[in-house]
Amino acid sequence: MPRVSIIIRTKNRLVLLARSLLSVQQQRFDDWEIIIVNDGGDAPALDELLTQVPDVVRRRVSVIHHAESKGRWAAANAGVKAARGDLLVIHDDDDSWHDGFLPTMVAAIDREPASVAGVACHTQYVDEVVVNGTIARKGVRPFNDWVRNVTLFRMASRNFIPPISLLYRASAHETLGLYREELPVLGDWDFYMRLLSQFDIQLVPRVLANYHLRPADAGEQFGNSVKAGLQSHTQVEARILNDLLRQDLAWGKVGLGTIANLAYDLRELRESSSLTIGGLSELAQVLRLRATG
Image 1 (cartoon, rainbow, N blue to C red):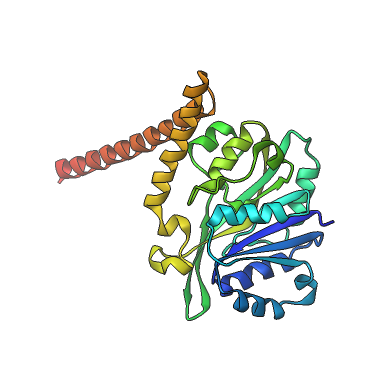
Image 2: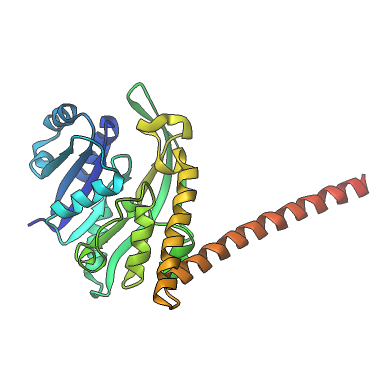
């Protein structure tokens, strides 16, 4: 049985999928399996791509074909159900790892007690475009290098862990259930809050994962869910927060819903205050310049 099950969700993005397979192939750790969930994409084209993959990778790849798209979190759940490893990671088809991700993260979680359900590493943004089937990198910048630990309260304020950077115990799903398939986006954020309500996530303070971003106008095929659907994210955030708070009200207690809504609103107020203070500082500087001019 493989130690790590790597779930790759994809749909008609073969150039990105090929890179994600290379990302796994280059790992300095080889006790893994790959489960590709083709969520409504061209099945023959994907199967043809796999014939070009080195045998050392291909023989450890299984593919689940969905004739029609069932959604990103239904696809994730299909991979979770098929996984044989005791450790899971969602490696989306457009993201990538540094070659030390798996050896470092597996060693890190092995040092932790069962109360720690996952380990997350620092991640960097990689800005890129896809032109005529070729990926062109535009630049690299920090994503979550400010993170020093992972707490439920901070996670409730915003999702700062992309799936590519989290290795977690498959047994967590026995306690928490699967990802919420009815959510079009942010199923990871919802799952992380539920996870942190019962377990810990430890931070590995090294940049070992790449979160690739393409322009908002890249279209449905090559767009990121965040870049291409900001309004959708905002609406789903409200839906998740409302669902959690309604659970608290139904149970007549202060719980995750109260904590999540407080944390989210405090973050909104803090960011709004920062913008206001910044605007006042700029105004004061303009007035000083005019006074001295």
